[in-house]
Length: 166
Length: 272
Image (cartoon, rainbow over all chains, first blue to last red; front, top):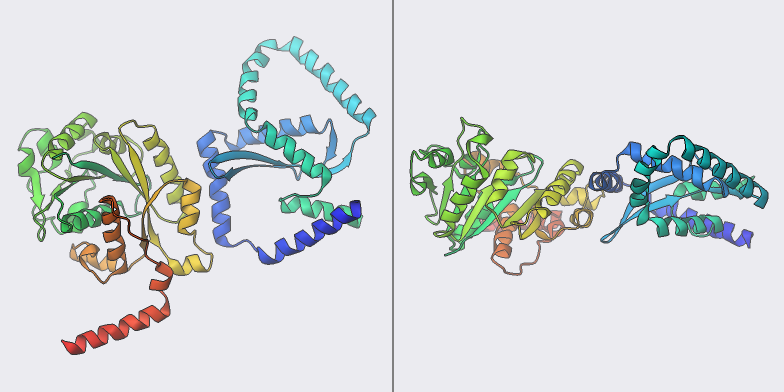
């Protein structure tokens, strides 16, 4: 099974690289899309970075991933705006590790709760708002990258390729 | 008569708002409509230059507001077309000299006598923009296929959508260079339309004729041969509710067509 997915990724990667060398027009379009999403949502780079690091904290409890290569981008699909999260998964965590990480974070959370309950209550609604519409996207993307089958991000493809070489 | 008030705006400066205004206004007047253009760019007026009317301005919009003259006295008639006239901006005052209410009032009065009132909006999103938009119920957002212009257009669209008075807005993409689009070095019309998800009303190719026509103070739409002129004429027809196909810019600017036109021009000259 693994062998097939590797071959699939390599073939797809090969075609993508040859027929779609990014033109300056594509660069302009992509940069514009990102900047317009920021303009429209009031999510500036700092906030996006914060969202990114919070997501890393959350997801790294469950999987071991390449934190540097995690990508968080806005994309537009017709009228709908989507927050796309691409996570290069290095390997699955063992059950023990997952439980350990969950326990740690639970302890941390309860400590924090005691320390600054005021601050928490202020921040919570904000977080929910920004994540609400993208919840489904995120779960979809994680599943995809877990299976390492279809992933549009080039970097992730490279990741999987490297992995097979190892 | 109840005229339509259309504001022509862009956010970014230098994308061709005033040129668009002059050409659409002239085309509508040539189509037999009564048109008045209002320059609301107080302190930086230019619409008079593009129409070649700079020496005929006696009163400006500020004179009307401050009641030094009647509205009708301040309207400058076009040299060629009696259907077309201009209400010029004051050059020595700033944007605060006319309020939103006053502009609304002027538009209401003009609606009774004219089919179209085209409001030329200053660049920016500050008071000048707010004033210009105040009396309008439709908008044309001018942009070019450049990142900064598209970004600013997006901002303007956001502001227009928030305004109840603006019932509809459409996008005019100016200064398209088919050769660059073909080599993927410039965003295409489709790209811009998709990114802004707005309805289109016109595509104007980059045309050196615009520079010479501005030099002469005569809108390029008067030149039936020019590509940009034809594109502007089509925009006017779409405003009038006609369905006009978009020009195939790539074909029009290809070498073969140019050569054909060159020879057609030679033959035409010989016959004369």
